[in-house]
Every structure is written in C-alpha cells, then in structure tokens.
Image (cartoon, rainbow, N blue to C red; front, side, top):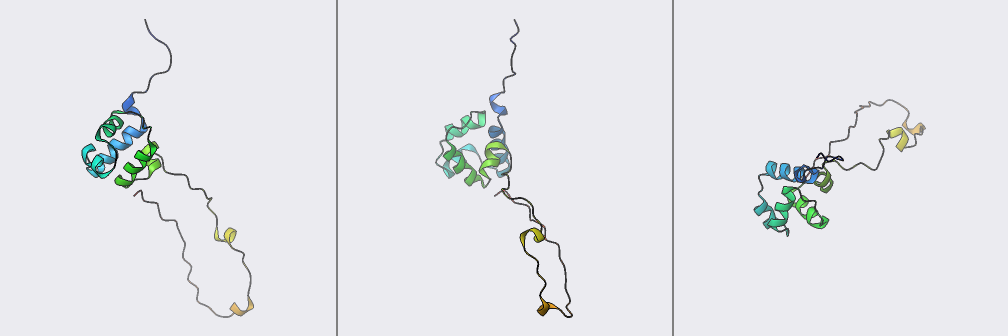
Length: 120
C-alpha cells in the first residue's frame, strides 16, 4: 500500500550537513582534527555529518570559527544579508558650492566599487 504525503528529506540532505562536509573537504579537515580544534565531540560532528540537525548553536559557532567560515554560510548555505541599501554619494552627502574652491583645478575622477566580502 502506498503512503501519500510529503516526500521526506533524507537526513544527509540538510543544508548544514552538506555545507559542513563540503567545507571540511575543502579545508582538508577530518572530524577528529576538527574535534581537537574545538570543544565539539567527534561523535557530535559525526552525527552532524550524517545529517542530524544541530541543537547546540554555540558549538556550530565554534566550528564555523575554526573552519574560518561565516556562521550563516555554514548553517544555511547563504550569505548574510547586508542591512544597508546601496546609496550614491549624492544621497549620502550634501553638495554645496564654495567660492573659495573656484579657479583652475585638475581633478581626477575614479569610480568606487565595493570589494566582495570574503568568507573567512
């Protein structure tokens, strides 16, 4: 008899488990060595790698710090949202004319672009 309902997500398919495995592989870190770098038991790391959802977010934060990755990226696989909007310089500053600045000037204009954030 077929059961109807939502398809269950396999434990290993959770974003946290995938992210943790991927980052550990990229860094060349084993669960045993990560356990020694943090105060997180190797068995807990093993459970997380198998897909168990973490319940101790402080331990996740320790792992993120040891792996030099943003907490949100490790836990959810997404970058933190910037809490400020893109604004032009004209929107940030008042522009005033000053007679003392009149005359001959050589002005070089350069465009400023935000540097991409690196996940440490």
